[in-house]
Image 1: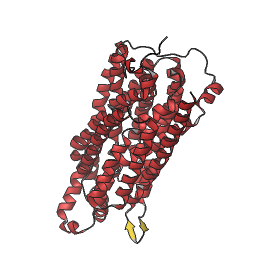
Image 2: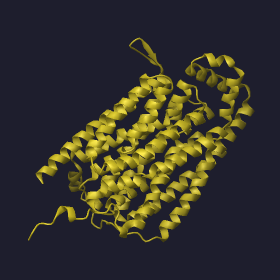
Image 3: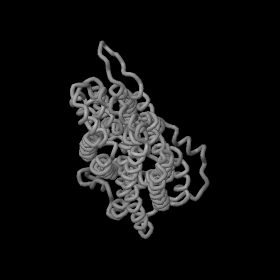
Image 4: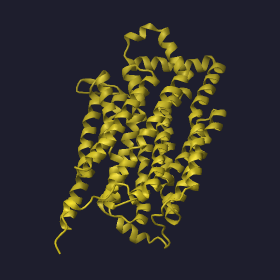
Length: 469
């Protein structure tokens, strides 16, 4: 028989028609966890000022938030393996709503620890959602288009993130009484205009601490008001999540594989013990750490080094997210022409250079470099995910996915390390004194080095395997 003309063979659809409804419905989840991530990031700085704690202590917000992923990722995968992706999603939505509702008693009791518990439980839910949704999207179509399909779904994650950032910037941060206190201090001390922003920030923090000592009742009223403001978006999102849970409960979704047999752990680990998967878990850990550090501490960078208010600094975080969102769609298109590992490595090098700019360049130029890092990060999470799970069956992907969701623990450890660096002293390098905030961005720079190595090595391995076949 004559061979089929390749030009006449239609390419597989990214999302087949029969899976379109399921794909659209599950894609809403990507926006939901994006909202939770980015309405929470600004609270690291806000809680520092509301509760008068150190940067390292306030970064416990990220410790609890991303620690919840690490705690629940593997248990979630084991549950989903025995039930279904849909059941995993419903459990995740229930935990999401429950954690968000815990912020109400946290506010009433003015307890930082209860807030941490709420974030911890909330991310139990996000672990279920991500462990379910990511491999489910990969399974909804031809394996050849799996990475492209996941990138498309992940493109809606920054839409939720952008919404969370806008809520924080427009409604939460400007409404805080502590922000008004800072502005009043600036207005009362015109000499601050002649000082370095980092010095001014120290003076205002000292004034806030003195206010808490001299006027205890007024300070407590300020704290109560500000915690009420912080709680509001979590109560609203809890209602939205419960409504989406109801939609999932009544929707019929295609079942892409339920494991009836007992898990043969040895055989499964053997299938997962290769560089692309294990290296992917490591790369994902460093990627999430880099992302959370760049987005959490952009507020510290803007306030301490540029002299911006919290809401002004958060506005630049919104710009970064718009760039991230735009770049995600552009990079999804570029995957038609460039291999995933190659593009991942190239963007990692770009992230390294821009982070170096944020460290060394002064004024707004350094801030623009930090914003630009988001363009390079846009592709990384779903591409690492797709490369690491390439070739696994849907059932194996459920547990394989757990390792990649566990890797989100990078968002718990690394921001805490960066917060401790910000609390410390600056470094003198080449005859120049670098502020501690500036120095702390060495951590995300090193993360991009690791991701670049993984991208290039994974692409080399995949190319060699393709030639053998």
